Image (cartoon, rainbow, N blue to C red):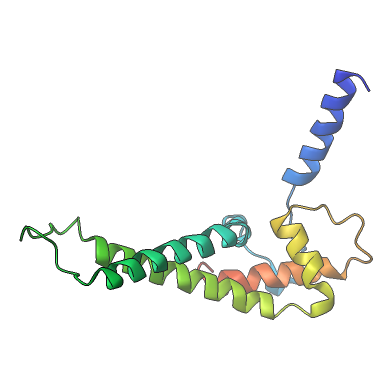
Length: 152
């Protein structure tokens, strides 16, 4: 295969992957474009958020084992530099987002869960999936994500 053919084939694959649209068959689940894409990218960010929660938990556990939560030297933290509070707030926010996405995942029937998540997270086109019903579940799933994350 020549370089031009390879580039053309990669361009076609990228076009398929970057193209996202909603099912409009069920009007109740049609989202404004901005909300649809926020839901989509929140789901795609799930793994990173879970990893960050683990990092924050590990840091908290290390601080508890060190024995002292008081800062050495007696210098007070400024309002913008409160590391314990900031990491606790970040962790709480991430946990809430992950909980909302996981709750929406639970709403997908087992038979369609792998197809929906494969399409949303891995950006598989869905052309090889057995039927088109998974698309309805994808739309409903992203709607539930938007509701659970309070962006709708």
